[in-house]
Amino acid sequence: MPRRALAFIREMFFIESSLVGLVGSAIGSLGGALVAVLIYAATYGFGMTIGALQPGLLGLYFVGCLVAGVVLAIVAAIYPAQFASRMVPANALRSNV
Image 1 (cartoon, rainbow, N blue to C red):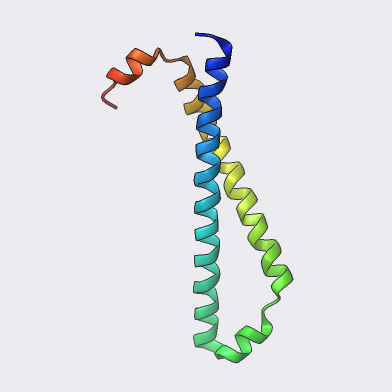
Image 2 (spheres, helix red, strand yellow):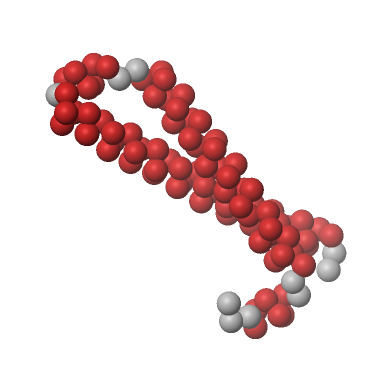
């Protein structure tokens, strides 16, 4: 198989994994922040909780979570991408995995 085709297969895996990592970490970050705010609001009151939030720091944590999620998803896709790029396409289509 030509080198460009192997690179294209790996590229597809990395693009897919980075998108999955981005969406998953965004949903997880927003969900985690929402749950934390609701728990603190139930404990200390909604006004006090919202007043104590620091939007800049919260945004920085959100960006950090996005970056970590994308990087971890790409790292997790390295082995499957290498494995898939070495497979013969006809064998991959016949696979029952």
